[in-house]
Length: 226
Image (cartoon, rainbow, N blue to C red; front, top):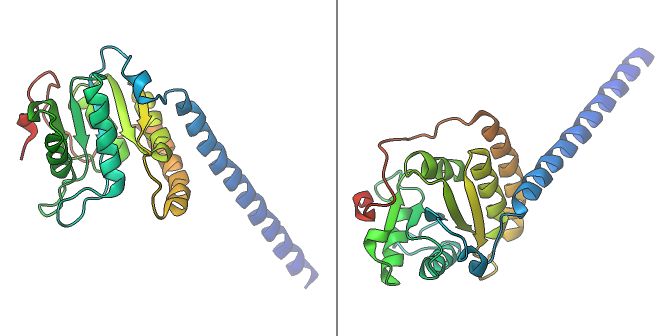
């Protein structure tokens, strides 16, 4: 009986130590990703002073059934268009999920930008931006972007910039936090796990789900239309 209790106590201590070590590692990685990327975050005015930027990469998120952007996506688009109008880059690259015929983030994104008087030829669409990692990877490998400005909400921007840096890109970020969003506390918690995931992925650098032929950003964005 005493030996059994001793073994049980040892097992519990080991489990506790592993839990503490795992938690410390997770928070350490989270802090590392944020600290690595923080210096690349700019205001719109600062970003407009950059030179030779290939494109403004606007990361997609939820689109409603009627095709209208969710509030978070609309704010990303607003900032992306503002940067374009400030002359921060000559092209917009809309990257998001168009993996199903009945769901098209990038089509809605381009339509919104055209509605704000951005010329269609200056708007490229990446229909296979199925994750943050894949959006950034494809911006480099498919669209040939080496120097980019990434637009998304601040909590998400740390990870996107970290991925870009690890893929060998010169990347800057502008946060599109015009509003507060319902459920942000839960979103912040999930983002910690996502940072750990992409920290691990960038150690391996796997190819994305889809690649394809190169598309030059100095051409006409209409080549990416459906």
